Amino acid sequence: MRFYAAHHLSDTGDLGSCRPTRSIERTPPCNGEGHTHLWPSVHFGGRLSLRGGKPPTGTRKLLGRTLLGMLRSQTMKNFDLGRPFRWNLTRGDRIGSLVGEFTDPVTDDEESLRAHERYQHCLSYTDELVECAAQVLARSADSDLYFVGRSPDSIFDLLSGVLYDTPDLDRLHRLPLSLYGMESTRVTTEDRARLRGHLTAHGLTPKSLASRSRKVALCDLVASGSTCENLYHELRDWIEEQRAPWNIIRTRIRFLGITPQGHTSPKTWRWHQHADWVRDLPPRAVRNVSLDRGVWRHLAVGCEPKTADSFHHKRWNDPGAAAPRHDREARLALAVAVGMSSTDGPGTHAPRPIVS
Image (cartoon, rainbow, N blue to C red; front, top):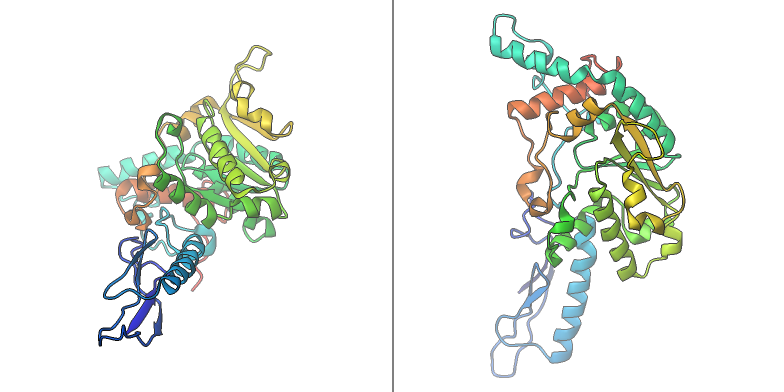
């Protein structure tokens, strides 16, 4: 019979539709009565299903330990966890005519003109975003920059254009996870496993944080700091479970909060000064970059169009998240991203050259 070990998900990324990728021919043992013992078949979720007669206890335990260990080690490395799709403009993703109605509107079409007007409005904040992006890059202190969630997408796009064709482009990463509000939500074991799977896919494991050559700067738009706090606690719990060297890792993590511009006085409320967890990190491991309050609201409160829906914990295992959106809102967001990361400078329409 054929003994299957599933190493990869199907093309849809659905955990429930695993396809076997390694098969090994086995000669089934006989139980002495002419009946054939069937080897166990492996299913996701760490279950072993035995069909027919059972092999000897020692063999069954050895198979179980070997196969479950193999699956657990491969899960984080090879499985497509359904991360939200987003066009990669710096690597030449083909966008075809998806953005044409926004960049080159039809003059006698009122709806097209309204779409173009909104597109221009999104790009009108370019000057403020350029200044903010420069401060983010400077305060990252040569760290790898991870932009958390969707709010800082425009800053990521802008820096991708600035650093295009330079070695520093590899320092930029998107971490499209929404952890806002999780402090008031019961995080299940399944949620935590999926979160760790996504963090692993982005190279943010306890082991990698302890051994990587560059520090990590986690950047997000911040009001009260709940996303940063939730991400910190999830990482810290994982580090403790893995018994990774926290005394080393704590020196390699930075948080960059993009905050709405306000009065600069000793009495000004600053989110990090009221967060107990910040005291576990070295001084200056948490830094802030101010952004014009109107622009901050545009990015943070949902006024700016996004290419994907919010990737909150209920969608961390949704294979549909990996499918590209083609509705008007997503296409407008793509047009803005192209404008921000343009080869001719932010606010222009020239996309990256397409790599064939």
